[in-house]
Length: 424
Image 1 (cartoon, rainbow, N blue to C red):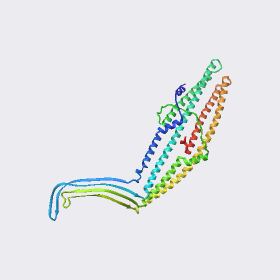
Image 2: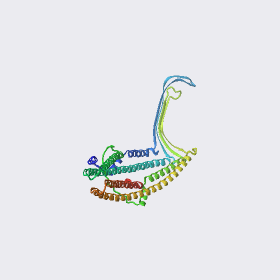
Image 3: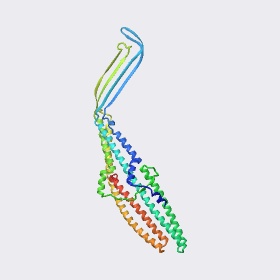
Image 4: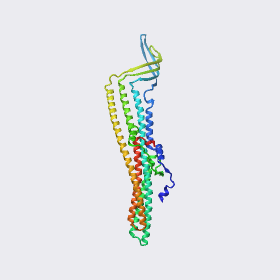
């Protein structure tokens, strides 16, 4: 009665609503979003070297000097006085060509941004899979609560029957003791399952980023919809699987790194322009009391590092090795995903078969318990035989519930490998 009254006023949280909450509030997804934001910032045009650089500089100095100038006309003694020097300039510099290194570095930044988005997508997929697993755990435990409540009510009714039977001389004290033990066991099982359900709800609330003690009910209906065969699933996986997409992105990044490393073999050409002003005032100068100059200046700078001690050669060779390694890893990942798809699909088909078998077992167990209950009421069987039929029905109900959610989790595993999980 406590369990039934506690959930009567609760709203049902659907899995779709749970996924929406997780997408908005899950902490790992929020961190992944920040990683995307950081990668996007790094891939900005301002971090590529494609834009010119501009600088402004200025300096000034005051000095107090006293001394003597020696000239052909004789010595000239001067007292301490102020002397000024000053300069200012504004300039622009632009790298016209640096061996395509700048371009491929920029492509690496863009590819890293894309790779970060793929990593974030993988986090979302894993989170949705984790959320679904937790959601179905809550659903299974909720069903088990109902099953155990029903079992407890049956055991209580049996205890009452045993007590009446003993009072009217149709039973023994042993029947009462056995019934009391079964009531206690069923109560303990219900209590333990209730604690497991509370823990599972807190786990689900954490994934959704909600207050941990928020209470709710879940939808225990399960619909299977995977209208794809193994060939179609494999084709989807080779095209959309997040692990394969990441290896492809990493392979492109390795190619860009190799091309960027070769830039050291090319010359570099840059252009610069500036406008400067400088001056000096020295009243105690021997011949020149002051001067100033100003005007624009433009120029080109061409440099070619003919030999850098083998640094570029070493870096290029390392990039080639990294590229070859990435190709091997891509091939390995492709075959691993194909294997995982076939295994997951076989697991899913086996889970569906088990579900159908458990459904048949449940019908048989229910029918057997109904007949046993009638025979027990008529005194044709013992309480031990009745309890065995009750346990058979209880186990069949639990096994069917577990098989139902196991099959759904297996279906979601297949969808994740095929890269279609988020389409739900």
